[in-house]
Amino acid sequence: MLEIGVIRDQKEKVLSGLKTKNCNQEQLELLDKIIQEDDNRKSTQTNLDNLLSRSNKLAGEIGALFKSGNAEQANVLKDEVAALKEEIKSLDNQLKACKDALDEMIIQLPNLPHESVPQGKKPEDNEVFKGWDAPMPELAPGSLPHWELAEKYDLISFKDGVTLTGSGFPVYKGKGARLQRALINFFLDEAVAAGYHEIQPPLMVNKESARATGQLPDKEGQMYHCEKDDFYLIPTAEVPLTNLYRDTILQKADFPIKMTGYTPCFRREAGSYGADVKGLNRLHQFDKIEIVRLEHPENSYDVLMEMVAHVEGLLQKLELPFRILRLCGGDMSFNSALTFDFETWSAAQGRWLEVSSVSNFETFQANRMKLRFKDEDGKTRLAHTLNGSALALARIVATLLENHQTPIGIRIPAALIPYTGFDLIS
Image (tube, rainbow, N blue to C red; front, side, top):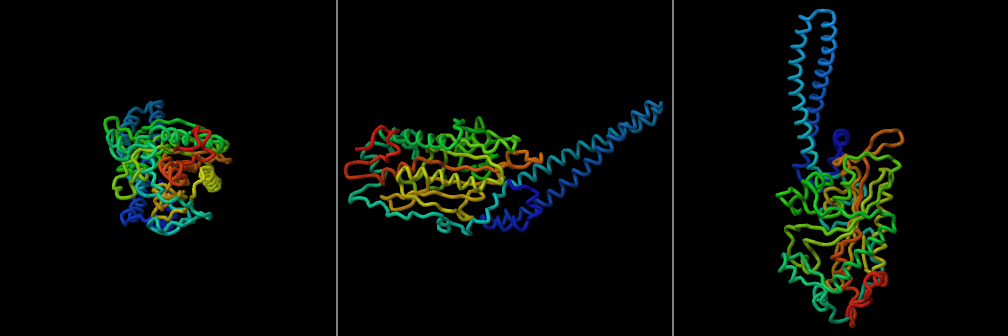
């Protein structure tokens, strides 16, 4: 959530940033309404403070009058205090209504983009931050896309998933299930070796948690909602991991806070259709290892590049061709100030598939969840939050199968063999 002080003091910068984020006219017009509502809040707060001060002063005078034996005058002042209490109660309700209205307006605004974010509205406008400079894998004639490989080697059943649940819920079998488990353990071990603290969080969160990290109200239509209990199935482990520090005041010495967690992730992917949903390309349930950082604002962009390097190292060990994109304003998430996407090359499909997003949210999530720290001067400030997929498994499995297929079977990268227990799927 944007800070009201930033909206008031840097309105033109905020307006420019919202335009880069491709906001609609209704969102842009919210700025003036927010400032007006904040003026109402300030005025109401001032009036309330004045009445409280008057009430406290009268309370002292009443005590003095009773002590001096002037009960009649004391009772007059008591009547005035009683009237003031009614006014105070009314103003207190008005102030709460102002604050609630202010929050509901501000929460509709996305995070402001970092100055390095390129202009653009669609994926084609993203900037190639690091391209693949080696030859692309040359597949032998008759090579197959991953969904046909999965069927050929009995690794994944999409048909059984439809029977059990519906499309977008595959069933992993035999060496396919072992490959999935191997990747999970490999990614977790790599994160722990990099200093991340492993956590296994719940797969459902309450509304407050989803709101704190920015999934609500922006992505409400994409989340699975258990209405009876008012819980939400998590779209990413970022939500519960970051919320572990909701309503927390840290010390500067607590940084860095590094967390990692494996969870299944659930996304409705409403509106998805066509070739993009074939096989493992787009699922409603998929496994992912997340890395989350809570950082001092001065360090967060150095940390972002450290996280990018971590994900890059994973893809190198998996021997997959990849590229890194710096997302344009219109293709970034609601919460992000700067995002780098990783894509791996799907050799059989002849296209790039997104497998990771690494983002810096700056104070956006911290402001929602009241995640603060005390600096060396004792001043309370908002922390910066960051997260990244390290990695999302479905499309990693897809590109592993396709890129490593050979005439005699699917080769397992050397880094994974200790986890799979086999070097070839045949």
